[in-house]
Length: 483
Image (cartoon, rainbow, N blue to C red; front, side):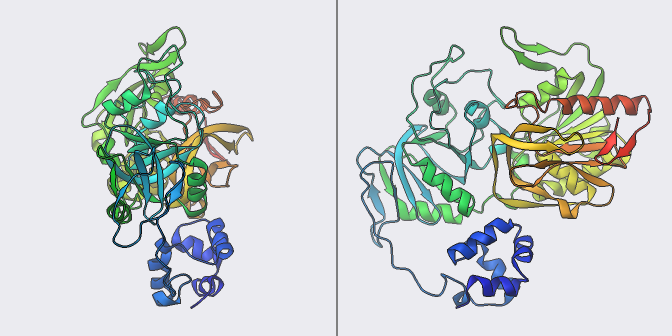
């Protein structure tokens, strides 16, 4: 059996291994620390090195079957039952379970819809805005663990929605959901989740789960809240292990609009509600890969007449609306998969010279269209406290983020520069082309953790459009086109 250092040497070193597998060097460091390599990377390593499965750490010696333990309370982690004990009655007080692909079971108390869902398990560090998070289309295919313990205490209302219905597959929280205590609440979060067929689990150790995700990456998992209170743990574990995961999955086609429509609603103001854009200055086509409503509101508030088109719109479809600018929205899934149809459309718009602005998935797709590559992050960025520096001005923005993939800066072609960088882990947060009027950011400037640190980007987009319309000079600075 080879040790981790032997295998890294065969792969060409830690950095080469990280690049080949599409992970961070920090993950490789943790392999050395743990003296083992996660099983999900074994196929790629075996293919690259020619080793046998028995050569890998932890693959040579079979581990004894874990014993089923009975937790003292639902807020306990257990493992799969011994062979032959598949159907399990939940521990006292527990009515739901989160079962991970490796057989780990977190027992808890169910709420929301009584059903079973399988998804990638991720965590979000935001302290507020849980309703916006649950309805963000970028969470398609994911179950969300909130690190903040008090989720649900402001209830739910019809205004704090980023889409008509929640797309997250499930909700994981520490404390039981309480009665709402906010004047804007119109219903209990539990009732709202039931109405949208979304299950939840409370009472588990969310810190322990978050540490697992932080150290080992987001696992596949099944959130089970059965009406009869029985659990086939072996079957649930197999279901989680068999789920293919988000890498290579195109989810934009599942959350996009089915037809084009006009958007005029502007941002919400206290005491006034949402406004209406009645005198737009420019025409923008927004390509909906899973667009959040507040992004569209910010575009309208910045002076845009917004036409939203489906993710599968071609360059001809987009340009037929005679836009002054094109916006590429956020969305879920693997950008490389969505790029199969989105990249040719974006390249067609780039060739036309129409200014482009992208956010999140739109940022990644623009990078692909310009010739760069993307990769899956070890754990992703999800929260409302992520520091990002604008390299052009030097200013630091506190941003809201939700993404599991990133742009590989080393793959950026000549003429495309880095404009923003994460101060959390140094990953790319923005690019701009010096040859074409196009720029994008990885984070969500329409959200307000700063609270308005990043709203300038919508103004920058409109200024670029107006400069292009006036055929004014556009010079290339160190961070891309300056207007």
